[in-house]
Image 1 (cartoon, helix red, strand yellow):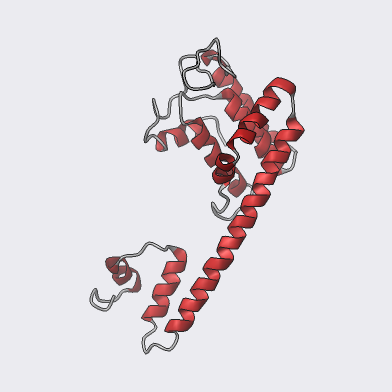
Image 2: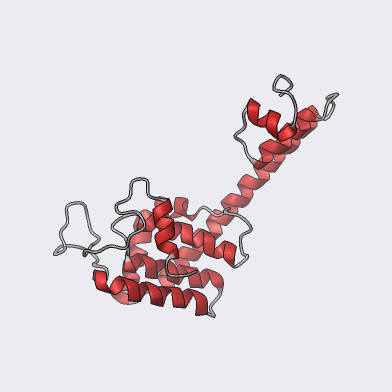
Length: 211
């Protein structure tokens, strides 16, 4: 992962974010709504340090000899601590987790939805990050992060099993049809549940009326 990578992701996620693809040029801070820099709970590095901090972050990702899940857990904290964008930092970092795990061949596709875990336990998430910044509580953060991976992995597996069961039921229902087109449609639904009549006609190379 090269240094420009986070900015490119930020630019692609530009809907609703300020200065898409650009690292911040002003000081930002984290705190309760309405808080000022004087009352902030956390103040990221000044703008001039964003580049060097991201370079160190990237170097860590490339050179870490720790287990991949530990590496990305630590990198997630680092990125959040740097807070390189005015907004959209969380979206970029959550996407980076998935891309890192795919790059390391731990996930074949984006099947792990950690955002749901972070949002469900938002207070624990924020306290975990703050604990590292204030007390160096790395173990607490790692336990939280790895618990999230475990729970959302179980959730993904459960969903996959239910989807496969549903597809098997549908395949059984259409297996006696004179044409195999219904079965082919079910197979397409397994790949993408959103489908249109025109899409079926194009993908199956059949007439629109047949679709």
